[in-house]
Image 1 (cartoon, rainbow, N blue to C red):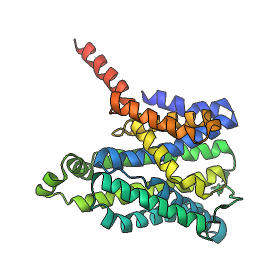
Image 2 (tube, rainbow, N blue to C red):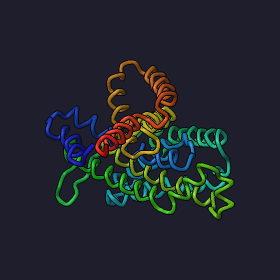
Image 3 (cartoon, rainbow, N blue to C red):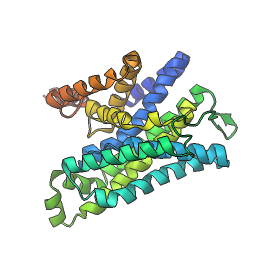
Length: 308
C-alpha cells in the first residue's frame, strides 16, 4: 500500500461527512494504537499478555479524573494516565516477567481480572456505573467536540505510535527482544539482560495502552468497567493475530477489520468472541503471519517478476 493509498483511506471518513462512519473510523484508530503496542510486545518479544485492557482502563480513568475533576490540562492528563499505566506495568512486571510461556499468560490474565475488580468497586472510578458527562477539550482555540476534529487527533496519535513502534523494533532494543523471543537462554549467554528488556517493553507498551485509554474515554464521552475487561484484551489480541503480529501495518489492518466486524456483529452480543476465536484458529493454521503476509508475499512475487 503506497503512502498516497494510506492517506486516501484515512481521508475517506472525513470526506464521507457521515458521523457514524467517522465514529467507527475513530474506534478503529484507537484499536490500531492498542494493536500496534501489543504487536510489539507479543510479536517482537514473544510475551503473550492478557492485561492490555487493564492498562487501557488505568489510562482512561486517570485522564478523565485529572482533566474533568481536577482541571489539569488535557494533554498533561493523557501523559500522566500513560505514565501511571506504565508504572503499574513496571511494578507488576518485575516479578511476573520472570515467568515464561503459558505461565506468563495466566499471570497477566489474573492481573487483568484483578484490575477489572478495582474498576468496578472503587469510588473514584464511579463503580459499576462509571463516569458520565465527559466533554472533549478545546485545544489552541480548536474545539474537539466535533467527531471529525477528534478523529483527526486520533489519526495523528496513531501515526505517532506507529513511528515509535517502528523505532523500537529497529533499534538495539528491538534486536535484543528478537534474540529473547528466539531463545532467551542463548540471548542471556550473549549478554542480553532478558529481564530488563522484557520489563522495559512491557512498561512502554502499557504506557501506549494507557494513552489509547485516555483517548478512548473522550471519544466515547463516558467510561465504565465493561470497556476495560478481559473481552477487550482478547479482542486486541485477535487484531494482532488476524492482521500480523510482527507488522505495525498488519496490526492496523487487524484493528480495522475487527472494529468493522464488531459493529456488524453488535446484535449477536457475546457470540462475537466465539467468532474471534474461530478467526484466530483459522489464521494461525493457514496464515501464521497474519493477513499482512498475503500482501508481503504478493509484493515479493511482483519484485521477482520485475527482475526477470
